Length: 231
Image (cartoon, rainbow, N blue to C red; front, top):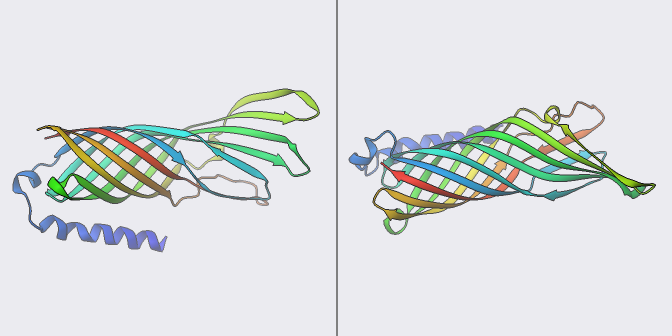
């Protein structure tokens, strides 16, 4: 938690000095300088630790859509706020150590409302390139797990779907790092392409069994594409 405060202080502490350097008056006077509609495809690699347990993970593509509003302090520094709907998915297989053919597979899908605040620095020819470091918080809306039970002594595969919201905390939070390029297509429009790394800091697993240690933090790599309206 101490590291979280230090990072937040460094990010927020640098905003005033950047905002005062070489301001573009026409840009900085606009409260909202850019509006963006975006979508992402994500690959998740969570940090997990379960004891006692023997499990395997298979990761599936997640998706998100949302909108971002940007305020430009200068021609090289912006502050972006985003809100969107995020889907996080993976397949977890619990294995019987005495008989690995005996296992339960859970296809997990968690849906979140996510909010992020990201200072962005622009550079390169015509400031086309950008890099950002900020934070996000997500609020769990739905959680569903499709279970498949494999028993070598039973030729029939048993399946079912459960509401798994009680197995997860109702929030997630972490740091986000972004690198991207904005490609102008007209005077008022641009295409935004970004690679995003989201690094979860919160343990999202809602374990209620004292004898079981369960740590689960979401990390994702995303490809983001967006359409920007420049005001």
